[in-house]
Image (cartoon, rainbow, N blue to C red; front, side):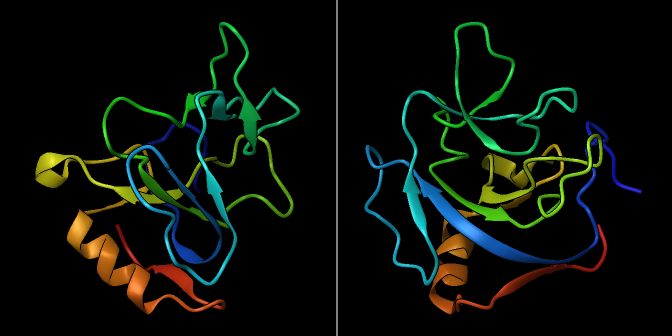
Length: 137
């Protein structure tokens, strides 16, 4: 069973809720669902004890939330998956994204990471009802 911090990608079928992108690094992606620009105060709450668990948040000074505006390019384009969000179960896992991969396709903390080329190919195939299926890890 998936739990917060286990580093595993959950198995199942997950809708794409919306896309996030860095407007300072790329053009707005053309996708059939909502798109939000990432700003310097944007984060994602991964703390199960916080009322905003598994939700986007505005970063406060000293916040432990995952910063979405990163120095690397992993979150230049992010597809936010509908995992543990309706309803949210504290500790079941948060921030399951499809995002860009590090050089060498090194492991993530539970997300799905794609090369830029593969991400572009995926974007070209997306439809409003597209679900991401994770069959095995």
